[in-house]
Image (cartoon, rainbow, N blue to C red):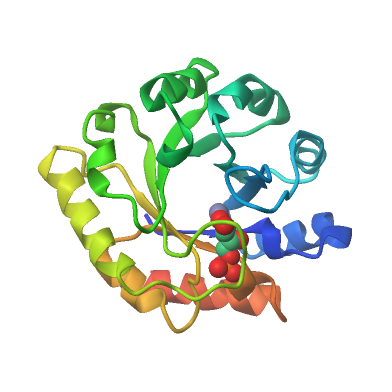
Length: 220
Ligand code: DX5
Ligand code: ZN
């Protein structure tokens, strides 16, 4: 039920294969891949050639978080790169419903991402087409920022909204500032998939992963 999705944005890009092996050897199943276009968010991170390369060295589930304007344009390319799940920002799509359809048409899972200030009701009429909802708990664009406390209530509200609408199986992923200080609060509120960048890749990766897995085991 619970999953850790390490964000490779905080990895050492000169040793990606080596670090992915440590993740896999320690039971990590998901890799969170942050693609930024320099438009929707100021930075440019990396794109298709990098995803294609890393697909060759890991079997982890590729959870691709697109911080990109009009992300539906890239559905076909992302499928070719080996993406498993693509999440798109509601704020970045003129036609959110069509964008989700474009991702599903490629045989990938599709999720919506909401910035901290974006209300939950933007998903009201696409819930039946969602494989996941990702709530940003920082403003997107950078790793290593502090968790925004107001998002805790938003996680609770979203869990209730999905359950009430008959979608108890749609998981909530939370991204930004998830670490030893905030993990309990985020799990208590109802998140099941935790993105963690700096809290995984800083210092001892294996020990950091174990920390999160112990938290999950305590709740199983
Ligand atoms: C921020 C990215 C995050 C980021 C998280 O825009 O979406 O995935 O890498 O980093 P931490 O866990 O360090 O806040
Ligand atoms: Zn992310």
